[in-house]
Picture 1 (cartoon, rainbow, N blue to C red):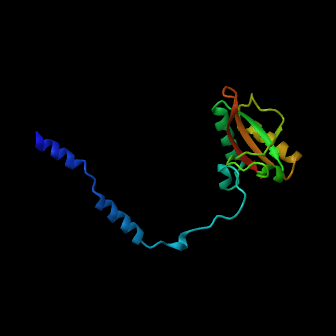
Picture 2 (picture 1 turned 90 degrees about the vertical axis):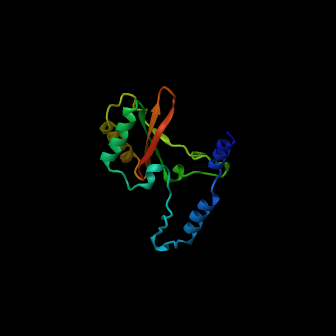
Length: 153
């Protein structure tokens, strides 16, 4: 019985030498600096802003995703200055502090496809050229914004 307890204790003992060897091998490996890239210093807002500009078909698919989840698409617009964050009076880590967008018409609660929203996006862009336009998905049950992306810069 005593030998079984001793053997089970030996099985639980960690082997620190193996992890040290792996760590030391990893630090000796040369790093290829030529493969690293520097991101251009541009303003980035939301996760899709790191992608190339979305085509109308891609925007329509994103809107179809919003509608498929039962969220009401809403179009908002803002000028370049209004879209940027202002940390003058607030130094916290929040993303949307002091950044307010103007709503284009009302949320599209009866929307069934992305083509309807694309038409409204184009009307908003024609009315306010040079403004940023974003699409937001609202959940009427939770009463909050569930998704959003900037579609026109």
